[in-house]
Image (cartoon, rainbow over all chains, first blue to last red):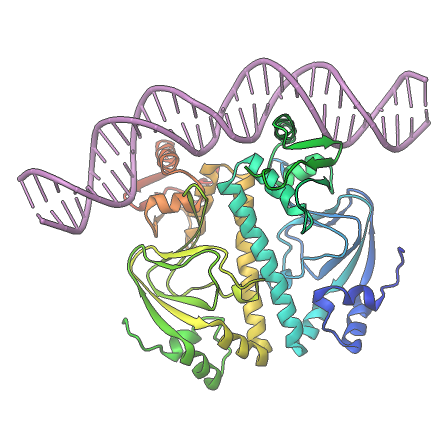
Length: 225
Length: 225
DNA sequence: CACTCACATTGACCTGTGTTAAACAGTATT
DNA sequence: AATACTGTTTAACACAGGTCAATGTGAGTG
């Protein structure tokens, strides 16, 4: 499963590369490399020069901001199959605006921004794919700002949960948290202690049952009030 | 100054249109129209189908989110010369993710998304311009999330102030708020009452002087601690 | 099988900001 | 000039959620 060789089909599955012809793909793969990360290992730091963007092959990448006092805030968790930092080439200064580290052991593919830009220059289709991708990030962040400013901690969590529910679910469903609770808490801008209390309250109100990192939702239609 | 005729140069000044040739520009202007908005008038609503994007010719546009309980949160204030909603065409569903209304009497240019997309199809240069633009929005929103989660209300305000300071300023400077205080407060996710207290505190600590909507900063180097 | 270590939970307490209510100021309206 | 309105300020109070401290718990290690 885990290899240093990158397979064309592995990339083609992702929208950003779905429109590439064989030549373009070969061109991109030439500059790409596989990076193995241990749990906790840093991939890049905020303010660092951005020459590459990434795709997670396995494991989970944690994108986070840090404050001068050492506080950290997880802004996104990137799962296997997803890309990240693909928009940074177009930012002024081409500097990563966040930190990235491995939540667990990860295998990550790194692509040269320059190589991808060359492809973009010759393929409006790929431009459109990247723009669709960027707009998805924009939308997600608007959703986050909405949550942070117009919702309380409990609502942020229930919305987060409901977001994980597979389409077609009628009433009850089990959701496995994809990261330790303190990481989910940070993702939702909640302290671990408060997160624990929210879990307890929702449980005592009969909305959910918690078993380790598995949350059983009693009824998705009544969870968010 | 204010006319229903759109001048080519007026558009060319903006990065999104800076690379267009005469034909492309003519093509776009054909589908464009001038919209006059009274103070407070709504331009579009969240969830509404997005067929157009906009450029502010005069006045200020307020982009905001609203909660079911009626609460509102200003996420951006768009000044004359700036465009907005240009990224929505690429979003799933092509739905505005926020509300837009006129903060004061506004003149706004509306462009057809379809027409602009046609241009994008034939111009990678313009694609690159739009991607640069979108990455700017992404960066701004990361900055906002950072502020909301890792900074307190006072720090959010002082950073906001310092952001308005023209480059090259040494120590003191006067900043005129571009909107009523309660709007600035909402932009910073602060209640008007809290905003007022913050102003009073910074004043009593000798950092600023407030005169209506003008803030005199004593020393930009010591304002944010 | 102790021992550790990282994470989770609980309880007691604290505080930044929200909330409520009222007074105030400036501007527009009659 | 009186009135109404809209935005701002002040003060008293309330509370969501942060902080601190202690205990619990399970997985990993020698």
